[in-house]
Length: 303
Image (tube, rainbow, N blue to C red; front, side, top):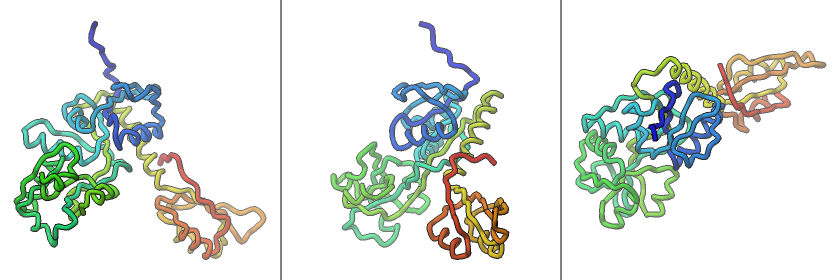
């Protein structure tokens, strides 16, 4: 059987096959109007309406695939990206890439945690301890920056049970809600790295067709991310209170002001607010004289 030859004018994007970033990555592409119909159980899928192919892999493989130029793009957690970059740099391997966009999902932090009963007053209390982690490069870099001498014990999984098994005195692991630490009677004492998902790009040059497709994709991602936090506000405002009401609109640019039929003392105001609109905001607007206040979500934006 002859080898399969893939088109060279389509972007190749690596995303996590399963895990916390997989669904969010696919949802982002869907919000960008990129249609992926086939089931993601396949390792390679083709978008129906956009020149991009999706490669589903382990998250640890994504940085390598992008840095080696096998894939043009990847969506990966910054924690995995930085760990892989440090490992490859220390090994003298190719580690060049660029971050095209930091994305609005996948937020977590890498933190050092100790058993609840162990006293802790400062980072110096970590001196001489054994610290278990799946992120030896990030952990080692932090300890070196803090001039702390400790033994880093590398584990591939179940890091949180290492102290109970006597494998380590402390751990350095990802923390989101903190429930896993609490269940294992651990407490976080220091955050060493904060992470979100990121869209990364190989440093290999792209064809004109791929560059054009990437520009369109980035524009759509920007529109989706700006719309996620933005709200569209419509209200009626007394002309006399218009200046005060405009000041209360969070993160808005120049609003659209229209005459209100049948009432020369009021206007209709429409505005896009780039910041969160809370109940307190609406109550302040009403107190200033606004009425008929509507706050609507925005699905997409293009500026």
